[in-house]
Image 1 (cartoon, helix red, strand yellow):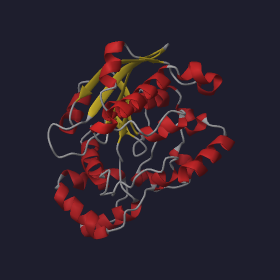
Image 2 (cartoon, helix red, strand yellow; image 1 turned 135 degrees about the horizontal axis):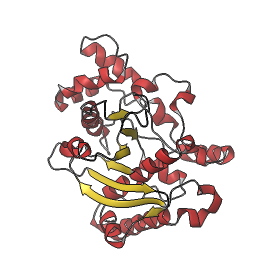
Image 3 (tube, rainbow, N blue to C red; image 1 turned 135 degrees about the vertical axis):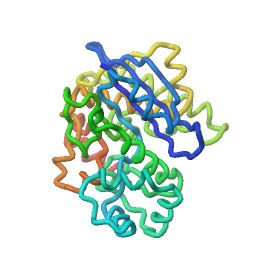
Length: 301
């Protein structure tokens, strides 16, 4: 079955660096087959061509904090949003400049519940600093809103109907997944030409770590699929941090599709706001409770 991962760019320039990595999940693991820069403007159309796509993970916030959504509904003179689609649809008919005005007026750079609970505390979808998250959030939500619900189940807003709906779509935070898998979760993004060699070395460490995950850690990661990448594909993946994030997202989608019980279930959070705010899917159950507690303390420092 076909699995995908996306590193999404919120840049308004076309084309931009929105990368799609796909691979086939087979009995012996995940075989990476394609690395492609689709640009955010063409991503939805590209996905529609992948008829065999079973699961895809995307690296951007699927929604916004609940209090901002209430604020936005008031500004649009609407009743409070009761479901995610109601919140996403106005963005399709709104310019980014209009959206940014609302964010600036709101002033509070709030976190979603799921952002605050991540081990590598995620940036607010409303963050305007570095990185600028509001563009990714705005354009990402617009893209998701255009997906045909007969073909895509965007979680947790829509029910995971495997077999009935062809493609499951989940939100992924690559740093979180790398952290859980005991791999470097920073240092692979090239800030300037001076750290090119260092960033490239960290990317190589990440790929090699994924390739040998089960061999290096034994029983701890025995439920994780083996990763298979040929040399030509490895070179393409090493090219940038965007391709690394797309690869990690693809691996996360493969893990979720094959072993969903390893992932933190939004319904266990006892927080109904996740049906509007969204959820970062991460295999938190890979870690023993004591180890997770230590990681949580470390991540908050």
